[in-house]
Image 1 (tube, helix red, strand yellow):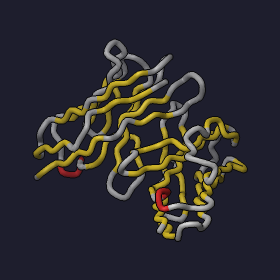
Image 2 (cartoon, chains in turn yellow, brown; image 1 turned 180 degrees about the horizontal axis):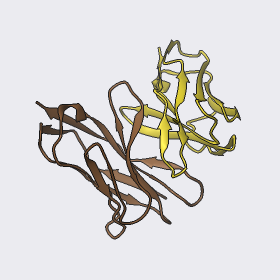
Image 3 (cartoon, each protein chain N blue to C red; image 1 turned 90 degrees about the vertical axis):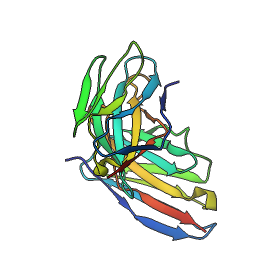
Image 4 (tube, helix red, strand yellow; image 1 turned 45 degrees about the vertical axis):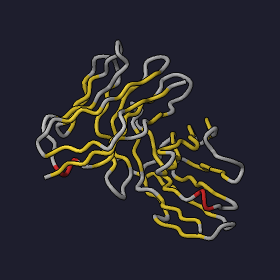
Length: 112
Length: 113
């Protein structure tokens, strides 16, 4: 059963601090996606990986955001330095054989 | 580029009413189409899918048919329940230039008892 574990579930930090969000597919998958969800902008694709290689990072808002996928079982999304406008729910998802996505429960980030 | 347009919400219905949420798409090639549902405080869950023209996806009483001639994938349910209250997202995954998934803006559904 495909699934994704994200951590932390909630993070509250102050502006300027570094934030690292983690994603761990329960079974190793080659395609992994990071999305951001806000009321104003809805669901935005930030970056996606295939075979651990970033394929499209055009959605990454700016240089403060970076993502890595060192292996098929782990990925991180880092924001440094964080700003209040980064407050959102960040989702990680893996892709099934016919293109369907399996989402984690999300990491809710609040930057004060 | 690919895009998905779905009807704006919120949609408010009484229990046992008929539901339709419209979704149209623009895509090159032959995308796969999906409906996802999001309950409060949770991630999106796959509700149903269709991978080629004229396919009908169905799950939990919900249905949607992949109509290539009208580029549509409307979601329907004959009799909604209070527990169906959620946000519904239409999405497509392209099969050219990578397998990026594009989502619509989401439609919030409220079902009253």
